[in-house]
Image 1: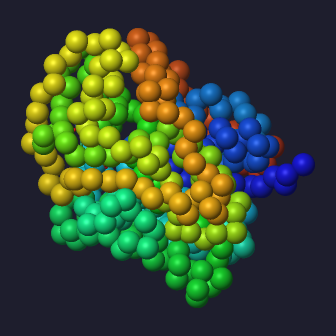
Image 2 (image 1 turned 90 degrees about the horizontal axis):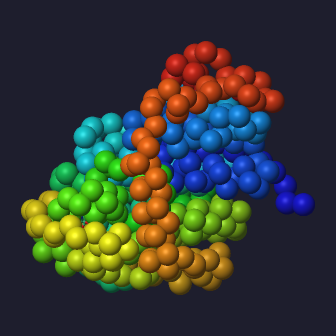
Image 3 (image 1 turned 90 degrees about the vertical axis):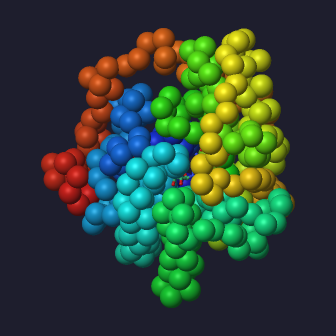
Length: 345
Ligand code: NAD
Ligand code: UDP
């Protein structure tokens, strides 16, 4: 029987974090989800409301945290460009101060910390596909820098905590991930195209639509995160699906799978939008025995079904109510934590 852990997931109410909580609970762990709900939603965790091994703390990752845990998955950070550019100073601080706060927690608890880094640290890459030893090409003063540079600094902090304080860190460079529970209005390309297709609205291609990305289904990404956390490798390790496509091809796939007759329209390319992106996953294959299993058409089908269901019956805020530090066999978090103050058991 594999050992179980007390695990903190920051960014738990987000797209990736909520799937990660599900998988950790399935494996028998006790999980605290921490989130300030800035780009996540209680809906994503509503099904865990009565779970005896889960509780939720509404708090900023940059605030003091006195939880006692032995694993920390640090996912807190808005990930969609419109979200992270809404409060760019807050985005940088979330990555830098939030990761510092979590590393300090890891140091105090003797916990292992996995940092959710990103392919964005490669910027608009001059090397293709991107291997972990490529150092990237990021515009430090552009509108994406708050995200890219925040994540780069977070990686630096992780490796300095490893060298200076011996904290066990794991760094995952996650490439574009998609799947059920993405927000319909979060502005990322997969959610935009699916919502537009289902509503029969114009499909918005930015630029000429020939820029490329690689899309990894959420189950595969979460599997990679779980493997990395329990591996001996610190990383950084790329986690992504190497199947590279243009946004035009993605639009065609979504139109075919939804049976929609929506029209393509072209909109200006956002500043600093990377032209090509594709992970080299040889390292993940070698050290984690990991490679993506879900083909794009299958993952899109599951994502489209989820969007169709949610768009047909939107939940009310009351339906999505989550218990704050309730239904748990552990000591309860104080009211202060529930309101956003320091979290403790
Ligand atoms: P998301 O926006 O759905 O989830 C992020 C969550 O973090 C949200 O619930 C948000 O409310 C929370 N959050 C943000 N700032 C916070 C703060 N200061 N304090 C507490 N909570 C905060 O995004 P996602 O797609 O689930 O991404 C999760 C993580 O994975 C992020 O760190 C992101 O950078 C990384 N990542 C994601 C992708 C992807 O394609 N989804 C790719 C690369 C990296
Ligand atoms: N994109 C697009 N139409 C949209 C949203 C995005 O063509 O409605 C493009 C965007 O310009 C980028 C790609 O799709 O080239 C991926 O965008 P996303 O925001 O999903 O991820 P990121 O740019 O962070 O990889």
